[in-house]
Length: 333
Image 1 (spheres, helix red, strand yellow):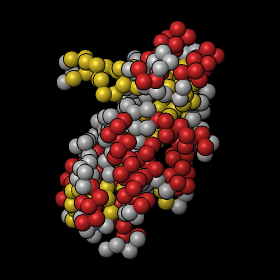
Image 2: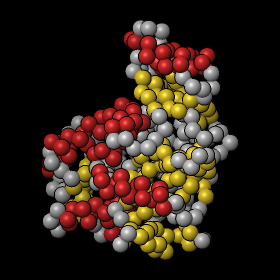
Image 3: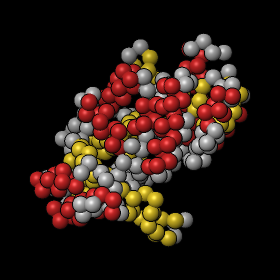
């Protein structure tokens, strides 16, 4: 068995390399962002390919996603994580369509594609509401819109003043080396607006499934009003209801590597906020019960706790092991 590791603008693809070397699995790095990517994939001799889409700029991610779909659906090559999981990754526009179509519980969200539609929406909206950028982690690009005046300013930034060709978009700012706050000109948002109902969030549960491994913890709401990006976590047993929600979704749609962030609201509802095939991991462990690191494995209708440290290489080792099992199931040795 030989695994192809798709090179990305994001250097995290090297964690697949480290995992393969540790596990003794043959691999080859394929320049997936180069002009000869099709030739490299065909000549690699690989049985399947592991992906790490970039998450910094929409254009980079769009190119990577287009190639990944072609590799899987036209060239017939197995990819991991799956194409749908990668399309959801850092693409809130794509996720909203999917959640709506399959009627999964989530905060009411609309994607507005014209200035006229956006102006009509903010005229009748309930305030506050949340504006989101399609790409962006740790609450970057997320704005709590508290008034109609604020909303109209955003509409003019996103859509310009009626001439699409002159729309500059909204520029977001980011910290460089944690010292300098500079405009991130390559991440401007324009020609669309995502509006989500504001929720009274008590917690945000992050439940992770990789193969038959389940991990989870709570994100605590920080001073800025968001759980994502707060850097605060709470440990303990995740509610059975959110574990079952994630298991049901992943079983139904065949997702092998995904983290689902679920709001727990003040009135006890569970609502899906985001779904990410890949995710940051600043914590030593991603499941800790009574001071013990571990994981859940679902067996015979129960979640069995197994003590141990499973956040190895930020879960990339778990992904490699699961992809090997997937390829073996296809008869690849």
